[in-house]
Image 1 (cartoon, rainbow, N blue to C red):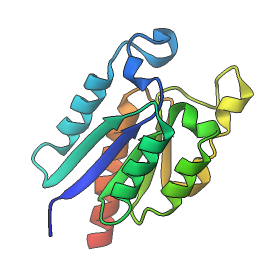
Image 2: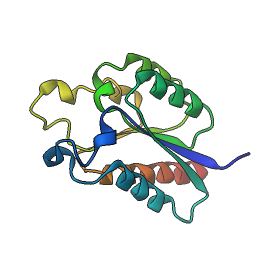
Image 3: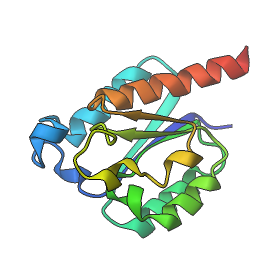
Image 4: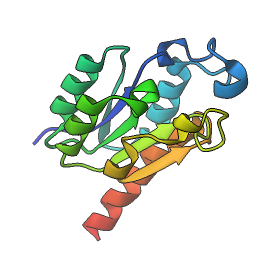
Amino acid sequence: MGQKVIHVLNGPNLDLLGQREPAIYGHQTLADVEALCRAELDGRDVGLIFRQTNAEHEMVGWLHEARIGAYGVILNPAAFSYAGYSILDALKMCDCPIIEVHISNIHRRDEPWRAQSIMTPSVTAIFSGAGIDGYGLAVRHLLQIDRRKAA
C-alpha cells in the first residue's frame, strides 16, 4: 500500500490570493497556504497533493482521484460553494473525511448568499474565518481523526 495522501483542493480565484480583496482574504498567497500545509505534515508519513482550479470539471476529476483511499480532502470550494452541484456529487462519493475551508467567515459576509455553501451538509467539518490558518487546522483535524480511528 502506498503513502497516505491528503488532497488540498482550491476553487476559483484562489490563484489570486494575496492580490484579490486583501482586506477580506489577507495578503498571503496560495504558495503560503501550501507551505503551511506541508509544515503541518513535516515528519509524518502523509503526503500532500495541493491544487487550484477555476474549472469545475477539473475539480470533479480531482475528487474522483481522491474518492477511494485518500487520507482526507481539504476543500476550499470558493465560488463553487454556491452552484457547483457536480462537485457536490463527486464529494459525496469520497470515502474519506472531507474538511471544507473558507478563509473569510462566510457567515459574516455582507452578501447573505455567501453563508449558504451547498457543500457543508456533505463534509466532516468546516473551518471558516480563520484566514489561511484554517488550512492548518484542517490538516491537524484530519490527523486527529486518524488517531482516534487507530485507538
